[in-house]
Each structure stands twice: as C-alpha cells, then as structure tokens.
Length: 301
Image (tube, rainbow, N blue to C red; front, side, top):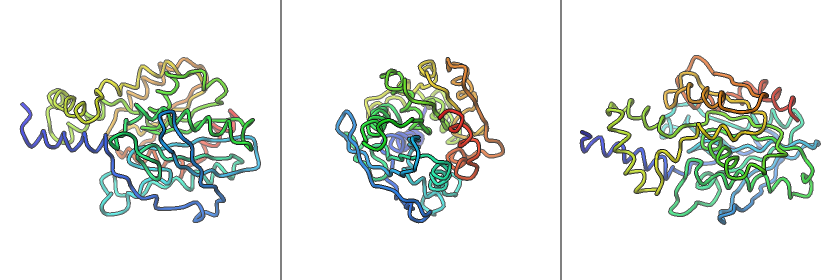
C-alpha cells in the first residue's frame, strides 16, 4: 500500500511534470556574438510561441526545441535552487553558434509554458502530448517566412520536444515530406520516467505507477499511457539520429534502442553518451561536442 507521504511525493512529481516552473532565459545570443531576431508564431490552438532566429548566408535551416523545464537558452542548473539535475548548466548558445558557423540558419523556440512563450490551458504542459502543434507551427513559420520560404529544413528535438515531434509525425506525416532529417535527443517513455522516479523515492514501482495514474489524470486529463512514445517511432519517415545517455537515471537506454529498431528508414543512427548517470548531460552534449551534430546535418542538407 502507498502511504500518505508517498502519495504526496507522487503528487509533487505529477505537478512538476504537468505544471513545470517557468525558468529564466539566463543568457542571450549577444553574449556569443550572434546576430538574431526575436520572433513569434502561433500554434493551431492559439498559443503564441516566442523564439530566436539566427540568420545565415545559406538556404539551410535547423529548427531546435528543448526539454522541460528548460527553454530556448537551456537550463540554469548551476544555480543553487536548480541543482536537482546534477548541478551544472545546460547552455544551448554554443550549439547554436556551432551550427551558425557551419553555415546554418537556426530557429530556436520556447515550447508552451516555457521561457517566453504563452502557456496553454490551466498552464499545463503535455510533455509533448499537446506540443506537437509547436513543431508544426515552427515548420510553417520557416516555410512562410519570405527569406526562408525555399530553404531546406532539418529538426533538432530533445526529450519533451522529441516526443512532440514524434506526435506531430503521427498526426500529420505529410508535413515532414520535405524535412531533410531529425536529430532526436533522449525521447522519453512516460511510464519509464515514473518507474525510475518511484525507484529513487523508494516507492514500490507497480504500486507507485498505479497510484500516480489517477493523480496525473486528475491534474491533466491525460493518462500515463498517453506518453508511450515508443510505438510512434514507426511513423518516422526521414533520416533520424538518436542520442541517449546510456546510464540515464531517469530513463532506460533500451527504450531509445527499441525506438531506433522500430524506425522504418534505412538512414538512421544511434549514439550513447557514456560515463554519466545525468540525463541533462545529453542536453548539453552537442554544445560541448558539436562535431557529430554538424556532420549529421552536413550529410543530409
């Protein structure tokens, strides 16, 4: 039986996933000498999304989203009150700079309820369930922007953003026919993260997941099963590069391997980051090691 204290822990977890804190956009592109525009676009359900556009002298665009509770800048995990994920900063600006120096225009945007973007109904995050609309709206923005209307587009999506991208592929596969490729960092099966959190909180896993379900449903109207992203890999119809921290304490590498195996395209790749249990090292990896990222996009654009 789940006791009162364990129920409260599960309730706190459900709130953290569904109503994440809106964290500061701590750094701006000018710190890295990057010219950019503050841009916005609107999703199908009427949410105004804010982003940065980094122009380059090319016909190639990378559209980048993020994990939760991060934003287009990254995550200020080096601040004392945000040190729950390893105590280090996730800074995307070096990654954007590496892409820009390699000749790419870059669009980086905040998912709903994060960074500078508007929140959805009741300030809820769908951890990718509703955010597929941002993915499609970002593609439409580039396709309708006068100076990028004929540009080649690729996607770099992570965690919640990767789940949102796969949900978008399921709902509107035709929107991806002209997308060159995808780099998917740490897509996440919802049940797995609940199981791993139960392990860390020393709550019996099966009982914990069963107790979490009604709490989460009461907050969001969603089920844990609504976040089973693994089968949606079968809808991927473009070259895809998966990246995952092997010993991720919040997930399992086998989930991402299963997604890779289900992906029905021959042009695919998977890479495991070794030597760390911190999931957020996957998010900062290409800021520190941009070579594989640039090589992937160069090969497909």
